[in-house]
Image (cartoon, rainbow, N blue to C red; front, side):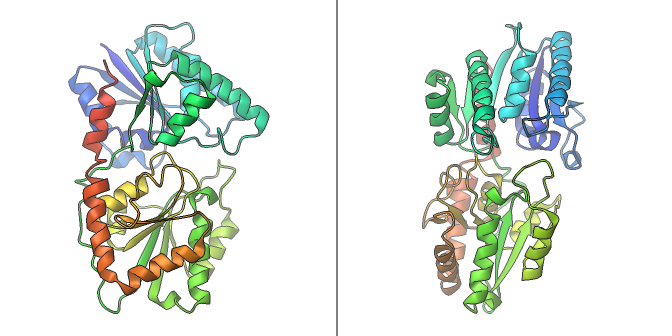
Length: 369
């Protein structure tokens, strides 16, 4: 039976964005294997129709023995099933797949650059050069390489000499517009504006700006008009993680924290504005989900974020670290609450529906030729 391998960091991270892709591949007669870390979240998705294979796949680049175990396991499955396609997501899984496919010219290799992680940002210079060298080789072996924003695409073409004809641009991982159905975002008179951030607890996700905005509102005597909620799980593997004392301090300030919920769509519906000041993204799912439900986004004018926020149409773009501008935009919404509703409606139409899971799936299926 012909097969496809989908290789990511976590089962959860593959099963959600690839739900329709998996269904389509199965309809085409493929057996689908999902490779990645087993995690606590994957069971919220339908997974009985695929084979789940557990990898170590640590996101950092210092886990060489564990990486070798992953490569050998992938190689074992490649030899046994001879997959027609191996479709990887994120740089680290792409590297593991590349090594497992050495001396194999039958499987068609697809690389998804859904974010750069530590590859170009946090890794030291020597390690970065090694990683980039291997990624360059992997890109040569790949049939297609797809990106979620034009900046990452340009970076790979320039720094890794990637053949532009191999590249594809999918602006997002796609959002399930049925699960994240539109809900009219109307602020009732006298009610606090509820400001939300959904992100892993990493400083680079803009948590510093989120916290500093709350502090600034408090210093201006405006915090009684707002309620801040941070939703995100801790990431113990990441060098940029928040430690427990950081979380305690955030809560002490008056910001609420929710580690996780399988019903994140209900959280969006209970809030008014997404404040997403990440320093760099691939195609941030939080903006897609918020937009689909009808929340405007105040976002950073940074790679991956700026492509999913239309300034003064679906929200506002501000420079990373510019807390005064964030406060100004929040006050603009508070003084003109009808703008929350208007921007939320535009976000659903111009972002949520445009970058739906259905459209993202159709784009990815074009690579399966």
